[in-house]
Image 1 (cartoon, rainbow, N blue to C red):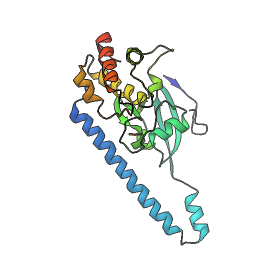
Image 2 (image 1 turned 90 degrees about the vertical axis):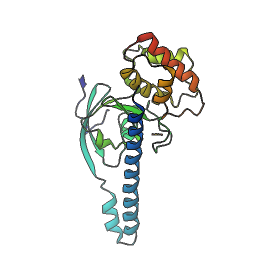
Image 3 (image 1 turned 180 degrees about the vertical axis):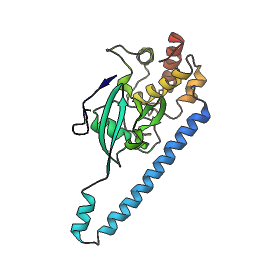
Image 4 (image 1 turned 135 degrees about the vertical axis):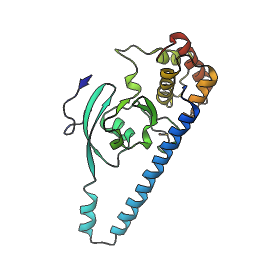
Length: 222
Ligand code: FES
């Protein structure tokens, strides 16, 4: 594992049982709601400040709370000062330059932002960055090694699974989580595993075929 210099000053950066996946989604949505609640509180506070002296409002708004965290992303260790309001996908895309992870809905509905955190798929738009302190995160950039695609990525190409491609990183990460636990899933198992990742091109049949083919080819981890 490589270790980058302290980035706090220069941020360089199944078959999961259906019940588990529902639990994941429920947890994410619950977390999202908690975040929304915090936003409402913050908004209310700012509105209240509107009637307070301008200097008091300014002093409150110029220093967002932040926390120093350590996390590993795709095998690289990072020490980053994150604002407490940042989501994990913001940290990945805007501060670690890992833009492979996409933001579709930004509200825990589409699954485009799916990454693996400690081996479990999560919606990165509804995970606060501070919650990733100490975590091992894998994004789509962490799949290929030395330019060599994983069997799953190659199967996506061979089966024309990407159309517009926007959901592809999320599909790949969720399918990777599936193949890590169920090496040779059948079509129904793949459908169930990917139910939380929406494809606006509706290319679901090709995506499922690709994941089944990858599992049949390797019979092991993605
Ligand atoms: Fe995170 Fe849609 S962008 S679920």
